[in-house]
Length: 359
Image (cartoon, rainbow, N blue to C red; front, top):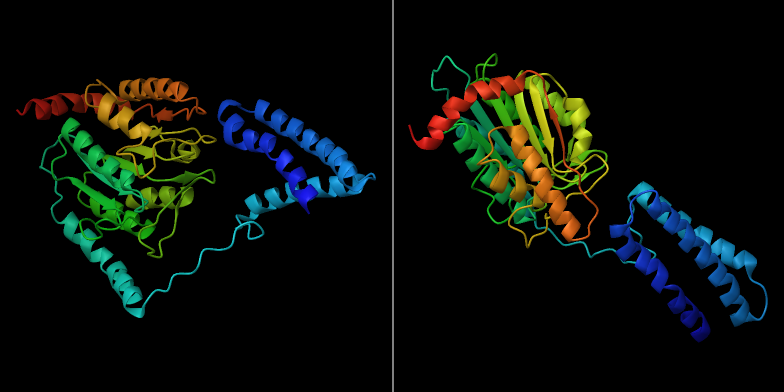
């Protein structure tokens, strides 16, 4: 047993270096080649080490060991399984009947809360185009998403003179009462409610989403153990189509958010994402006030930019420089600008300027 433990200990450093350090510096295909090289090293190491420990050749044992580890990792990822061979499951916390009843009541109240929030939303009666804002903070366990949506509402609201034509769905476990919860059904209801108050031929919707993401692509939705479903690409497309809103600016701050772009392409739509379809974004931990994208786009670039395209380009440059300094794999923010909507936003710019100056 002692010899086996020493053998395993000697094997650890190189694979650990590969997954914890090299993964941040090597891009595909170099990382793939590095994995192959480490795999060959592990096989040779086990062949020689087992021979030394046992005094005879252990080719079959070494090969089976490598195959088992590779298959275990691949199947765990494919099945999204908790690897109980290595880590015991977290103890299941007991939830009282009162807690379940309170959550159930809160969920039933969401439709009413959205309707109450929509009660303050109305057009000014202008014959020109007006802007509306809808925010969606998906994960309540990290404060950064709620704070980013609050910033987006302020910056976009000031830039386009939105006033009370806005609604935010917020998951934030620090305060479950300040806004309607962010959920798939809530998003659908909010979009339809805003659409009923918009001039769909003229008005523009700014939809800002901030959350964790995965490469399916899916937007994570969670809040204090409420039974909430994730927001899939089809969910978002269906909700927007059902609302009938034609002119749209959609900003998605999440990992892998670029995977939403192709499904949302339309001449009357702008889609801006914090990361490419195959990349993660950064800054979504609980010790951050904003994500890297939120800081670069909403806080720094958008207030002074002449156009959304200019704001996106400035934010993308700033994010790339920051990620280079921190030696992390670039998130590579993406954007699609519909051929018709940019001219509409340019026509709305004078009104935005007047709202900024207080006229």
